[in-house]
Image (tube, rainbow, N blue to C red; front, side):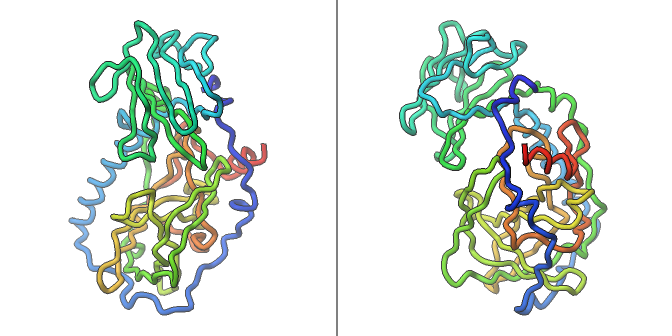
Length: 330
């Protein structure tokens, strides 16, 4: 892990994150007429079990977030990849040859050329050279060499090489996921109030970059009879569901300090949808130092403890609020 330390620095975001108090978000408009959607407890428990199995694979599976082994920003014109000391992108020798290949960057174009004798594949084909489409493209180019994969991401106007290793130590030492008990009181009917005009959220991520998220409106709901609202957004080009980034009072000691994520079905013709906080989950940054997670916008900080969903990870990347705050000012 220490060999990658210089490739990532958690930016100072104190005013945008730690400066936020857990202020209330009570609504002035009327919430949805019903606070809960009827549910069969046995069916709901079975559905939740299936959801958690898929969730576990997203973290600890062979391509999960616990496989992230490096993040290298591409700010120069040329990089060499390998395990030798001469490599400008240096990786451990256990799964990487001394010289894997070369990246050349010309504007927004990234081209990879494999070193003679290195076996690099994409889409099950061995390649010598290839122009790499980033994760903002319709189909990202993923290179594979043994247990390690490489692809280019774009964040905040910069490009970076993301490296995953299915045998990485954080995956081998994965400690499992833990959840609060299910509580259907936090499975509520929400009503979408569209913005008067199209709105773009400018949201800071954990490395200090600002990214834009399109927002269709506010979701209004009640918990234990108290009205609240949070801002819904779309994640990238995905407009088939809402993406929610929120933080609540449990982040002080029980859930991930930076907040949690949630996906929500699109509102129906009446403007209603189901908001199930039992499906709240930790961002990738809870499991790896090489992710670029967005932080909750100010209006999505809830003043009550949302005591359902995924708990704080207790594995080697688990952090206390104080640890996250200390890193933020380094």
